[in-house]
Length: 141
Image 1: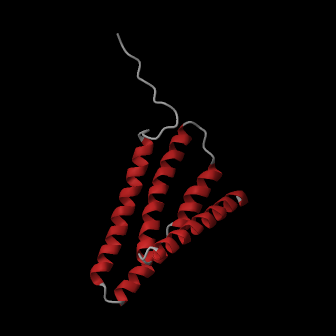
Image 2 (image 1 turned 45 degrees about the vertical axis):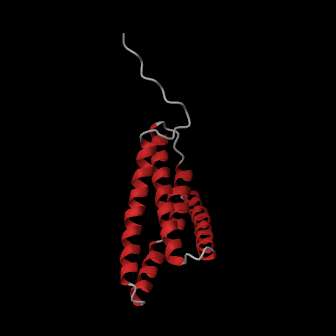
Image 3 (image 1 turned 120 degrees about the horizontal axis):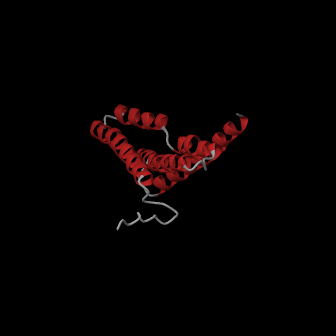
């Protein structure tokens, strides 16, 4: 159990570091924090969709490594994405009177994040990004 906690903690540290890089890059580009939070959440959802699909495929072949799964999904993606900062950004927009920006921010985060997760996981589960060549079905004569 301690090894899983360590894997999750290290993953969260790495995901959090990537989150900070996204925030600083967005600020340097003049986009600001709500955009950085949106970008981190959408990228994190695409990542967790991809990873959860990949680990599901690996589980079918019994090559699953629970430590790496916890490192990437719970740790890294959990550290990268942030509902608390999303909520705080929404609260800040609400307090500033930016109602239309608030509605656009909250709805686009939900729609883009969920769409990214579903799309990425579907692509992985259907085998579009396999490392091995696809097998051709046997031809019947």
